[in-house]
Image (tube, rainbow, N blue to C red; front, side, top):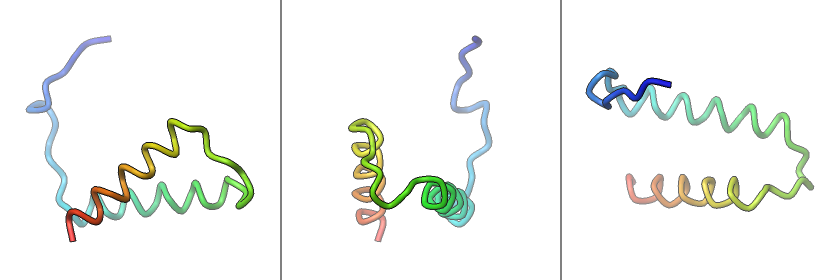
Length: 57
């Protein structure tokens, strides 16, 4: 696999980023049953996303 610099990718604006996050969240919500326990690493990542979202607002 070839490593690419971040400069090789175009940046996306906050609105697009938010839309992507919302779509991923909706898919997860549809595919995971409410009583499903998230794996520890996924739970950590979700908590990190929540923390960052709070920091942005």
